Length: 356
Image (cartoon, rainbow, N blue to C red; front, side, top):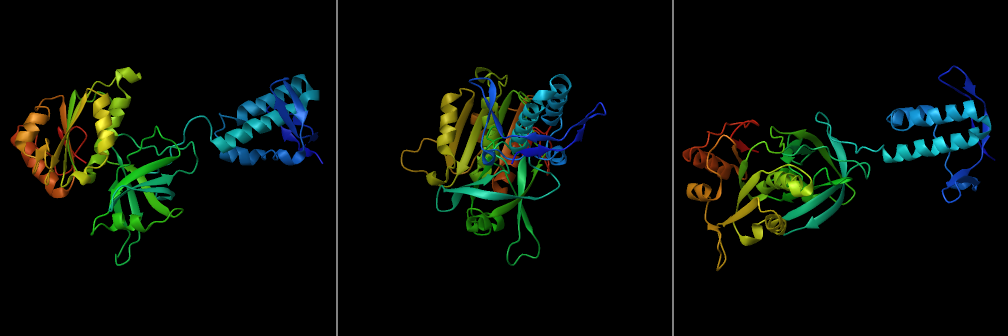
């Protein structure tokens, strides 16, 4: 039994008649339509459902014009036009249009499904969360972060913590979080219990930093532990937008990355690869417990290290800090002693010393 297409009003005020619609597909080899068994072709979605689900300008209007035009000029081909319009709108319905859809909502937590979990060490893992559609993007500006929330046993209210994805909007369909589980970390420990297929509540974007190309001439970074994640986000954005890659970002970046032990250096292979490929990016490692033959820094990050490795204070220089609170506090004092503008308790985008 063929599909039927009921009467619908045209913009001119007329109506399309009730027609029987056979199952069709378009063969580009012969530029013609051929019959197919009905079970292979889904019903055409009803017009109200399409209108509620689609961006009107992407598929519905062109499809309606196609049907109306064929009806006005070649009414005998109406069934073919309706079939083609149905295909166009159905494809648009399932792909969500040509532009990636940003899924983050700043004022609302949404549930995202854990898709993969990659163990990096005994207490560090990369968690990959799926977005609703393969073409969706998180919609996170460079330099900003997201909030994760969960109900934790023993806590009087929902616990919320901020994390910076190590993936970017260049990667559609998912986002990645690099998380180190701390003994007293409520959300980080909660994530270790999360199983594939379970969900995590996420809200965003948030944060005062929004990186734009060439916002300064030279950026100095000091990161400790998982504080590398917002730094990596900025570094990769700059390198992606280099002139050799078709962009215009010429910002120079120097990073001091401090950790306790060699195995604590997160994303070291990626950082080394970026430094090797891009002459405008340099990384200097500092360890509390260095191995034999270590050529990097030893102990805590000192003012002398900052003076030697990072750009000197200037109006077109910015220093970014992220790491454990004691380290960040010490770095605020160190940068101030070297002549950088004193960091505020809560950083703003225009600050010379910005703390994530």
